Structures are given as structure tokens and as C-alpha cells.
Length: 146
Image (cartoon, rainbow, N blue to C red; front, side):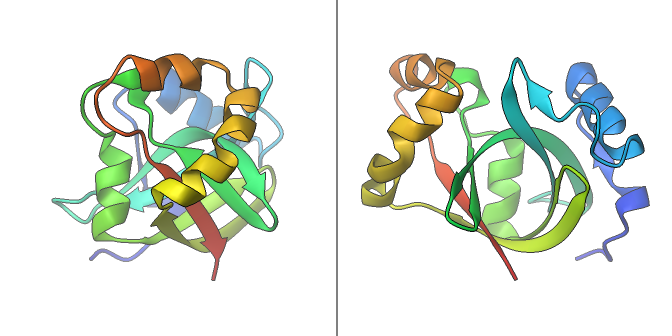
């Protein structure tokens, strides 16, 4: 496990994600905070093989005080890297707008997912198509402040 320093976190290899994360971070959460109107957060997580800190941008929903993120990867047949990372290292760092905090990441059970899925699809309608286009069950992850 490596020591967390937000300045040393590696951004996504996807250029558009890295660009949005950079804008979000450099503006202290005033730019790059949405995707076509859907709210976004920054998730700093450890890589499941290396333990190195990495950053991605994710659309989020809320469940009370908790944040919910969807490991859709656009409906790809495999889980996104960040999801595999948080399974290995569930302590993550989150930035929502100007606020940064440590959280515990926990995948929802199928029953828990069914309770929030419609709300998440309302925030980002393509999630419904993503789920239809893959055989894997797309996970929803709860981020709870610690």
C-alpha cells in the first residue's frame, strides 16, 4: 500500500477522463463537475495489482449521506479497473465539488441495488442500456464517509 498524496495520484489513461479530472482538481471543484448534466465526483483508489493511487471521474447519485457510483464501463463485458481496485483496497478518497473526504467503498447487494437502480438510471439514462448490453451484473458501489 502506498501513502496517499492527492498531488501524486495518477489520472486515467483515457484522455477525456484525465482532462476532466484535471479541470475538476485544478478548479477546486468548480469546473468539470458534471457530464451532460449528470453530477460527477473524483474517486481516488488504489490499483488492485500495484497499490498505486489512481483517479477517475464518476457520475454519482445519493442515498442519504452516502454517494452511489455505478461500475458500468459503458456495458463492457468486464468490470472497470477502479472497481477491481476498491475490492482489493476499499478505503478511497473522494472529491465532490470543493469537498474532499475519505470513504469506505462497498458494493451493494442485488437487493440493495434494486432499491436505487431506477434513481441512478434517472440521473444517467444510458445505464439501462449498458446493463442490457452485457451479461455481467453491473455493480453499484456505496461510498460512505469514514
